[in-house]
Image (cartoon, rainbow, N blue to C red):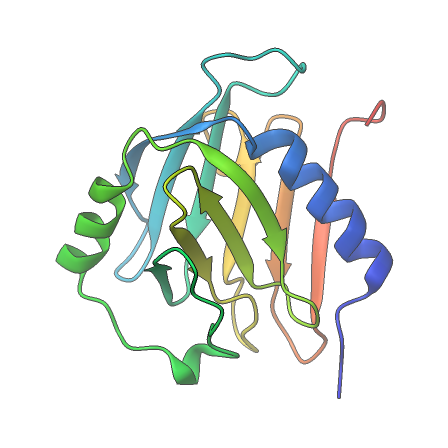
Length: 166
C-alpha cells in the first residue's frame, strides 16, 4: 500500500495553513470543464504576511460535512456525485466563512478545510488519471508564489511550491 510521504505532507500542510487560515470564502468561478470548480478565498485582515488572493481548483469529487462529522470517505468511489447546482449551493452556503483550520489526510492528500461554523469542505485527494485539486495564490491557475497540488498516478503524492523564505 502506498502512503503519502510524511515530509511532503508536513511541508504542504504548513504552507496551506499559512496561506488559508484566516481567509474567507469569497467567490466561485466556473471551472475549465464539467466537474471542475474554482473557489476563491481572500485574506481581508492580512497580518501574517499571507497572500491576499487565494484559490482552490477542484477537479475531483468533494462535499461539505457538518460540524462533528468524523466519517469521511476514503476515495471517490465512496462519494456521491453532486450536480453543478448542488456544488454551487454548497459554496453559496459557505460564503464569507472564515477558514479556521486546514489539513491533509494521513495517507492520501485528501483536503479538509474547516470553517468557523464547524463545517468542513472535504476534497478527495487521489486519482490515477488526474490532479484532484490544486491550491495557490494570485489570479490564475499557476500560483504567483504558492502552489500545492494533489498529483495523479499510481504513487500517492503531493507537490508544493513556496517562496524561498518560507
